[in-house]
Amino acid sequence: MAYGRYLGAVEDRIRRSLDEARAVFERAAEGDAARQVAEIARRIVRCWRSGGVVYACGNGGSMAEAMHFAEECTGRYLLDRDPLPAVALSDPTHFTCAANDYGFESIFERMIRAIGRPGDALLALSTSGRSENVVRAADAAKARGMVVLGLLGGDGGPLLTRCDAWFLPEAVGSARIQELHLWAVHAILDAAERELFPTAG
Image 1 (tube, helix red, strand yellow):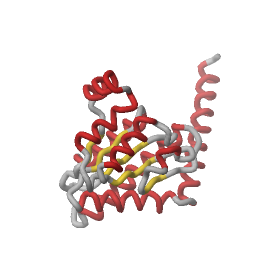
Image 2 (tube, helix red, strand yellow):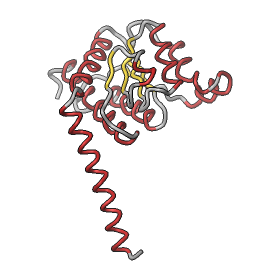
Image 3 (cartoon, one colour):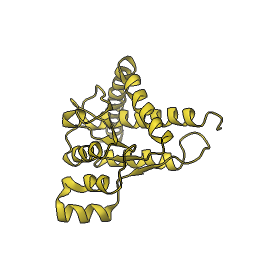
Image 4 (cartoon, helix red, strand yellow):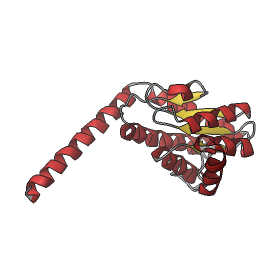
């Protein structure tokens, strides 16, 4: 294929991807996304105001978004303000130990059992709502008296029934769902920063 034809084909595919993403975000804007994400933000702010910690977990791209959430809490999102207590469950030494001895489905659960406390919150990310290790983390969090908040996909899966609040976008495919999850992470942080630090710049 000539270079010009190749470039044109790639550009067409990228434009289709942009069109898909635009349609997904338009559905979110017209639907219940703002209310769902606002409820998650409200519960996270309440957790922080009561001295709690927000833990976040997920697999693959969802793990990357859990880490993104945590670093923008302890670092910053938009405002110059004090750090906020958040931890992504992402320690590879723990994962290899727990998975080797207890199975991969145990990796998040055991961390929550070790460090989770009443009044803390778990932000659970799963594009299917069916990741067994995330579901088990949610069960462990509920047993600890923690709030469970979900960024989900599909029909929400078994994780939906464990969540006190959730964002369940109308999107198909993990890529589009994760793009909306990233928007939700930023919207949550924006709301939390402005609620907790109204005079910060």
